[in-house]
Length: 238
Image (tube, rainbow, N blue to C red):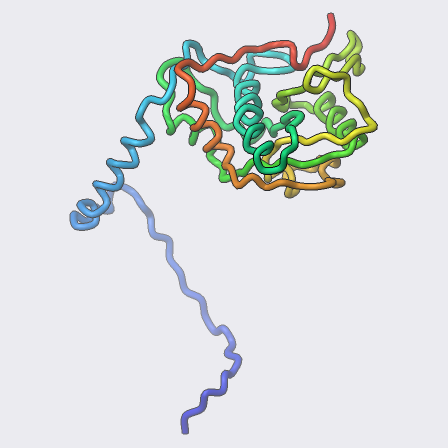
């Protein structure tokens, strides 16, 4: 007799084997022929020159800020500001990124889309969060005390000779703890990323749907030459 009744079965045995992928395995001509046009087109797109870097942009050429991190934060500020304003009618105040999300430097020479994938291989999107002045204070304290230099843009932090906080300016104005700020960052940080308390009390979030990597590529397409340097956006007085 047949029945449609589903019975719960018990797993009796699992079998598996390791298949080593090396030069011993031979490619299949029919598959290679099918894939080749797509591979060639992808490589053509990735390797087409978009901009030029007159010098290498590094992750360790500064003490409190670095040329590579500065460029990445600036790109997010430049590319996200008009998008956020058009969507909400509000102004973006500043940017903070995760140093660990930047996976490569940009070497001197031609810059292409493949460069952007090397720099930002993750599928992270740009989010804009609204934070209270108190939460921004926590963010500033985190950036100042972090063992790694986290990129910022639209903000200047100055420490005194002993490492204490001397001043903070956002968009050229003194930080005001009594107002809210709109901060662009990656959705990775907003969703939990590393443990950083200042994103625990978000007032509002705007998901731009804009990949960080695409913002980088868009910027590459707009400029002939990449210019970035260690500057005074985060310094300690001597």
